[in-house]
Image 1 (cartoon, helix red, strand yellow):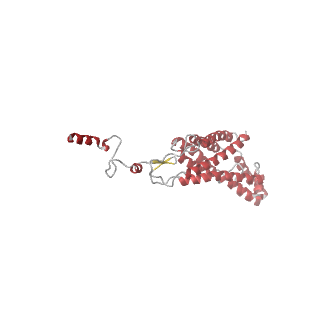
Image 2 (image 1 turned 60 degrees about the horizontal axis):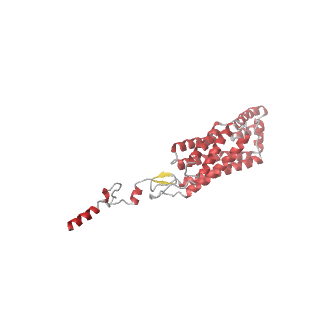
Image 3 (image 1 turned 135 degrees about the vertical axis):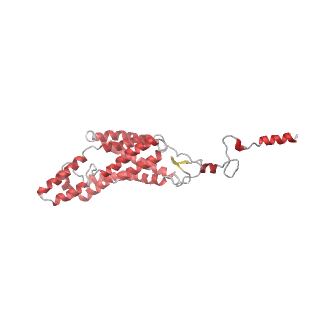
Length: 291
């Protein structure tokens, strides 16, 4: 009878490590602790896969979110300056004379048109980091189209409302003799013509918004902002291509563009708030809510 009882107890206490799906921990105990399992795996933090204990993209989300809102504020300020002292959009000589008489507001307006391009590039970088777990390929394509397009605006010396290059030409025009002024006026006329020519890079920037926003409709950031971006990007591609044929479309695109950047800025700041500074060794860490 004692032998039978001993056999029953031994059968009941079968080694747990022999059961499927279980493993011993480093110290030899039959069950691996949750902490040890978490330290051996990658955890998902704020939509991105980060190694345990490594810095997250929290600061990038904050900076890009603030930059996205600053993007819109700079453009609004540029419009205010433009309303106070609107520059000519035709005529090289007329433009150079205007700049000489309104140099300070003209330079300020051009800087306010150019500076936001830096913020836009940063926004697309942050969106790629945040949305890559949803669809890495499409997020990369959208970020390249959007980010590189805005970066190329920095290399193009025109803003559609003028150019800082014209400031130099204006200075030379005002001190030149009458026969010499013609060449400066002709050079200014070429820049004015470029200002009034639709740019392919502007169409690509709208395409970038469309693609990255389509990924956004799948999660991580609020889906409503994603659909707003889809509409904005689609209208933007049409508006930039037909800018001088259908200016009403371009005005509508401008309003939607500002609304999208402000909404994305707020969403990135909120994403930064719920992203820890370091990835925590907690296997229960999950993706943030998408709505």
